[in-house]
Image (cartoon, rainbow, N blue to C red; front, side, top):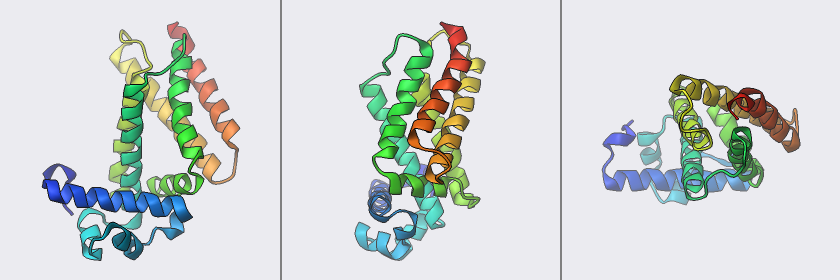
Length: 194
């Protein structure tokens, strides 16, 4: 498998088409509908091309979650977090991410299932998702926040967000519970900085 950093422009474009095809199929039918042959057909590439970039379906869907979170990062850059208090701004960002996932429940379940996989390819994407979400949340944090504290806060909130999403996609809790968990965690961690 080629590293993303070493891809030519054409290879990167094919890889992007494969990811977008997986996102479409996941949105249409969830995890089970993302079959590598169907992804290849939708993307207009050979099946072998997919395996050049992704070791498995879970790796592909986990990479799709990375792209989804990077898209969120761009949207947050264009429309910064709202809220007077630090916790309110962080909750604003996390709820925006959650609302986007709520609008595509089948896709969200597929992405969360894949990123939870022990598949080595998917595991490489877990750090990318966490890093992108940390950057997104950092936009809501005070500029003068101690760097070590910033890392710890975003790491804990990443875990709370992921755990709440896992509960939602597995039917353990509803979307209102996700928002409540995020709000409580953000206030517990961040009210001290106002």
